[in-house]
Image (tube, rainbow, N blue to C red):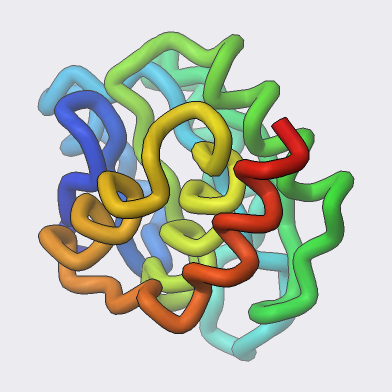
Length: 141
């Protein structure tokens, strides 16, 4: 797991293990999971990571969805989590792309679309094909 920085206080990565002590040592205060249980046989369970996070004093929120199938409710739940969780915040899924995408959708209307796309690109995620979706979400307010 190599975390990538979306913002000064939001990190994203692929699948993590219950060994979250390293995240705690880096100052991470909250974790959001975007990956459902059972996508791969060897994948750690959400419950095991949530328990490990609790043992380290890290808040944990799970907003799992299948890649490319997030709902508006998922995006709204993610936006609420962004507002409510203590930072630094660590977000994960299988590869980091799903988490970067939902972050971008939650940020649409909060920051300029160009800024969102640049932040994702700087973290190694090409979200340029999402521009129309982000612009539509931004227009909704």
